Length: 244
Ligand SMILES: NC(=O)c1ccc[n+]([C@@H]2O[C@H](COP(=O)([O-])OP(=O)(O)OC[C@H]3O[C@@H](n4cnc5c(N)ncnc54)[C@H](O)[C@@H]3O)[C@@H](O)[C@H]2O)c1
Image (cartoon, rainbow, N blue to C red):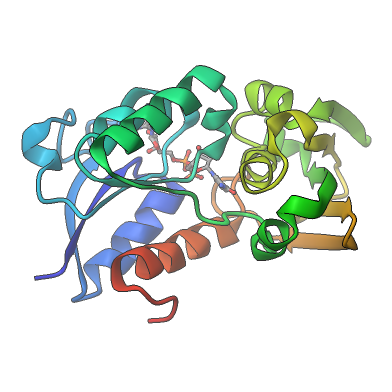
């Protein structure tokens, strides 16, 4: 019997994971929850469908994290893609309480960014982390004809204003110096064909730069590498390894 996985959100990332899970004998798809009833196999999460599940994967929206995270963590481990949801202090606190009380774990895959191992390694000496995210206007549901700076400020505010586009800022903040100190600049650029994230991290250790130019998936907001990172993380969590 394979490890049982529940999926919340059968969109671009969820569909990819479903296909990988179903074509592996190591895993079993236990349920799909989606606001779109045509995609869902369950209509809500309760003790019955959460029992004997090894991992629930959220790849839906920040709203879904708000709605289901604490409920899932009462029963089993949870991996979330919509990390921007954790910019809301109350939710982060609620999740932390649930994890501690029920002894469950919350996982966040690297998603659309790389190099988190470096951020974590230098964390105690880290003084500043700056992210510049540049996407085609389509990724923001806009129609800009020239480069437009949409936001400049801290990661908490960025995540509140652009939850679908700044999961990278949130993931960096959670692994590094937090939502207040992590800086984010968001640029809509009609010349942009890739979703580009440039990170500059500085501290007593020196400095490093991370640059990702990831092609968007079917969803122009979402980089294709996010689904790959989620699949890798599932393997790591449930099978204790990172390769198939
Ligand atoms: N961590 C990262 O770096 C990273 C990268 C890319 C995407 N993401 C995030 O991952 C999530 C999924 O991305 P995607 O491109 O697959 O999205 P998508 O829009 O293609 O699919 C989302 C699916 O979730 C469903 N859904 C939305 N809200 C829901 C809710 N409250 N309850 C149940 N179902 C709900 C939708 O009906 C849809 O089927 C998004 O929140 C996105 O911002 C994170």
